Image 1: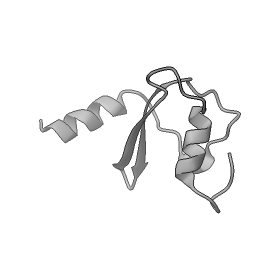
Image 2: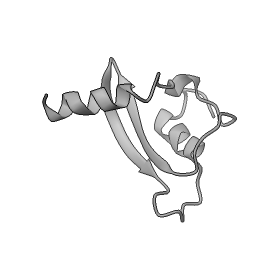
Image 3: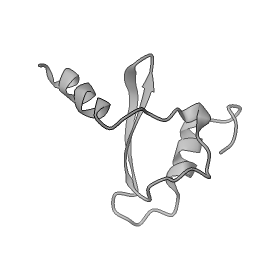
Length: 74
């Protein structure tokens, strides 16, 4: 199995992904971690949030930035 297939296989074990368009600030977000954004079944963005623990923004705020202006506010 190639590395990309292994990654997608491991991520599929985490359960169904949440959709950025359906995300709200009221959802239970972790304070830090790694996130993956998918489009058409492929990872289009991978990032980390507050890994050092010194971030002043929340995961919801970061995802809202990624979603962009005009696509709704979180």
